[in-house]
Length: 297
Image (cartoon, rainbow, N blue to C red):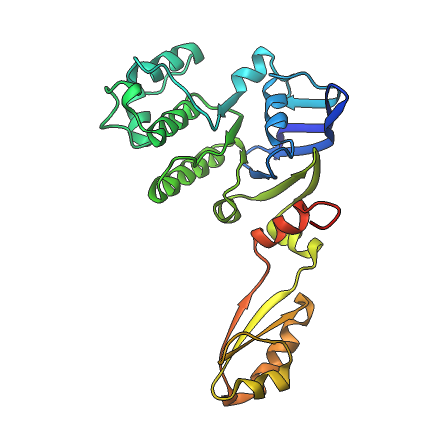
């Protein structure tokens, strides 16, 4: 698939401070990429650079083959900011109709508002909307037209659990239609299951960019095996090693390559073992590994 968004060796200075250091990142058409990082890692600056809202001082960005901020790039990009704001005196229908006219989009506004769960509020003034409802209206704006690139900054902010599931279903639809989706988020458990690739920033640098499986291999973090004993836990710990968790369980950390050998040793204990839980490194573990400071703090 072609890269709808291509960032090459991007550098950005703020005064004497370099806030982006040689950042290179691509998002292909139909791909969903999560952009993670602590506050101040450079995520917002990167998004502003893609939108053409702030100048860059090195490298190159192409949005659907165009320069950020150009007419072609603006037409190809949809953006949902975290702190979204609309005119409070307009209704949801009026606001989205205005956006559709500006974008030259032909979608049915009422259908779009229904798609994001606002069919009961389309003729209410936006000033009466909750934060979650405003977020839904912003998502309806993203759906206007057929954007090549969608930039979503903390898109689930203010949404309840059911609404979050609905939002990711819409993101899946966007990607299925060929939109390249970049999601800046702190909601690790959400993006772990709903994105194709994870990009992690630290102090203005891109320190990781791969699938969850690829990041796991790079990090080399251990797999956790929690063994629950049938009787005396000391017998299990004596045979397998590890750390006693409570009066019934032992936790063993092992290299992924050693997992099967450990499982064979556990199976050899027969009825002494009641159950085994296997927990590979999750995104939270990987994020902590790659986003930690160089001092290890």
